[in-house]
Amino acid sequence: MQITRRLEFDAGHRIPNHNSQCKHLHGHRYAIEITLSGDMISIEGQSDQGMVMDFSDVKRIAKQKLVDAWDHAFLVYRGDQVVCDFLATLPEHKTVILDVIPTAENLAQIAFTLLDPAYLDIYANHLRLERVRLYETPNNWADCVRA
Image (cartoon, rainbow, N blue to C red; front, side):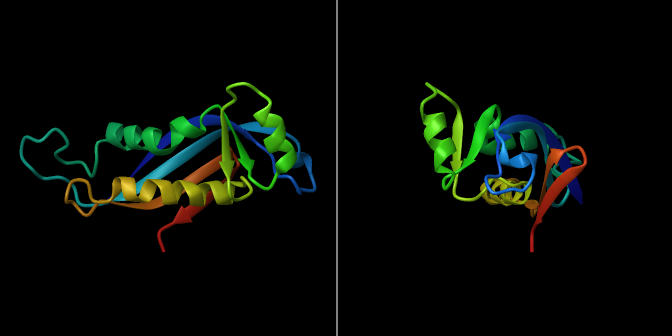
């Protein structure tokens, strides 16, 4: 069985060498979908009986491991020195420095890497992360799927 939980967050970024508007500082209302697979919990009387995982637990873990860190932050590539230097001049600015350019593809891959161990078989029901879908806009997204 598979389940999916969607969360949204706001963040800024730029793609430094891009040939269009994306080379400028800008932001998005990102959405992230987390798809998990596992057996349905069958322990009689348990709060999450009949579920793969309680959706509120999926959300809690995603917020703790990823969303709270990225929400209302500027996601910047470590090699984008001009922007890194600029953001460092802003007192208490929420900046997340990444080792890769913050494209939707790279962010989906980072999200999968961060979330994968957090969901690993919590309930002994073969729970595992199958896919992270990261929407940069409602019409553009990247999927990182378990190989």
